[in-house]
Length: 294
Image (cartoon, rainbow, N blue to C red):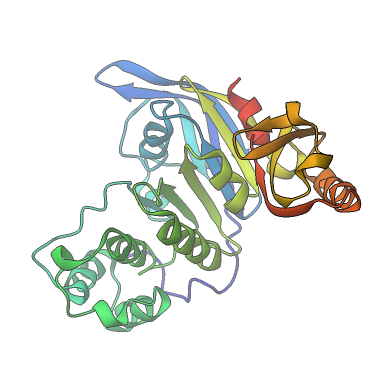
C-alpha cells in the first residue's frame, strides 16, 4: 500500500498539481465553476475565501471525494479518479472526526493499519507533533488544540506528495492557532500544501501563494508578496506626545495613517519619534489581501 514511509521533513515533493476547468458540487447543484490553476513549486498555497465560497468543495473534489461535473484534477498528469493518484494525496477535513472512545495511540494505530503504517510511524508522529504525553489519554479528554495535533499526526503517518488542509486553525484560540501554523510550516517544508482559510491575516502569515475563491470561481492566483494593495492603513497607539499628532487622524485609541505599503511603516515611526512621540503599538488596520474580494 502506498510508498515506503519516510521522514516528512526529508526530501522535497516534486509533484505538479493541475485543476483544469473544474466544476463540481452537490446533488447536481454547482458550487465550483471553471476552476483552473497549475502548481509546479513546493510551497504553501492558501486557498482563501469567505465562508461559503467553495473552499471545502474544492478540496473534496481534488481529493476525489466529490465527482467532477466537468474538467479534471491531475497529479503529475494522472487523474485523481485513479487510486494510485489518490494515494499521493492526503486530505485533512476541518472536522477532526477522531474516535472519542480510543486513546490517542490507539487511534493512531487504527489509522496506521488503514494507511499501511507501522508502529515506528506511530512513534515518529507522536514525537513529531509533540503529543507523546497525550498517548494514553482518551480523545474525548483532549482540548480542541490537542485534538487538532492528533488529527495532523494522522495525515503524516505516511508521506504524501500533496496535502490538503481544510481550515486547520478554525475555532482555535489565537495562541493555539499560531502554534498549529508554526507546526504546519515546519512539517510541510518543501511540499505542496494547499491550506484553506477565510482569514486574510493568516494567509499572509503562512502562505507563499494565494488562490482566492469568490462565489465558486477563482478570482486570483499569485504570490502573496507581489500583491499590492490599493490601500494600506496602520493604527498607532501612543504613550505620550499626542499633541504632535493631527487630531483628525484619531479613531478610538489609534491614530490611523494611510501608507503605500508595509515598507513605509519604518519611515513613519522615524518621523513620529522625531516629533517626540512615544509609540506603544503599531497595528495593521487593513489587510492588502482584502482587495481580492472587493
